[in-house]
Image (cartoon, rainbow, N blue to C red; front, side):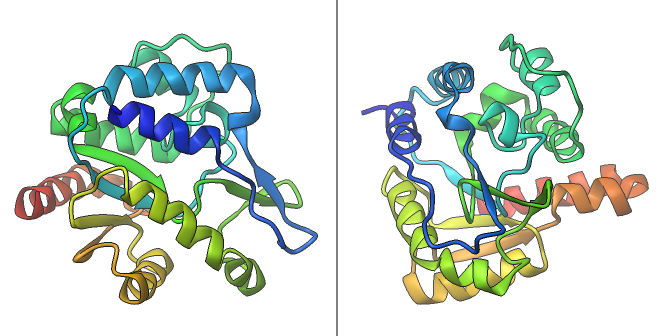
Length: 223
């Protein structure tokens, strides 16, 4: 199987987590026909080779990026203008997507980047509460309810073929969770923390180019 076939099989069979707090809703864009068409286009375009990828592990999808397009850190604007995949979605920019595609450009563009990296998240599905994004770690009862789900979905993705060093997109709670999780399950030899894209865009925008250079240096050390 190609890497694309493995990824698509994973998302096609992806169940929603069970036993969540009753106030928490799940974002599952893969159930929408138009999203699935785009997801297939994307992975068949960039992941036809079977080579191992380096995992870039985010938190969980949000409403305005992957929650719309089905593709991590890819809003409808980047999907159409950068990746060349036409889509019917409202062309609303998402801060994390802007940063990530600046990083992709610095790496040499989508073809080069996606041959090396695979975006995933601690939870491959997102969460909402009271109409707002909810991170898996924002509620302890949510985090606890997801423990088995996170393990099973990560195990399936790692089996697709991953290099032994991964990167966390988030230096705070995300890397803390991942390091504890990885110490228990041993999926990776090491997980390197990188700044979260939204944190950069909201709080360190004037230093974005400097941060991008630091991330590129980190890639150079570990890839």
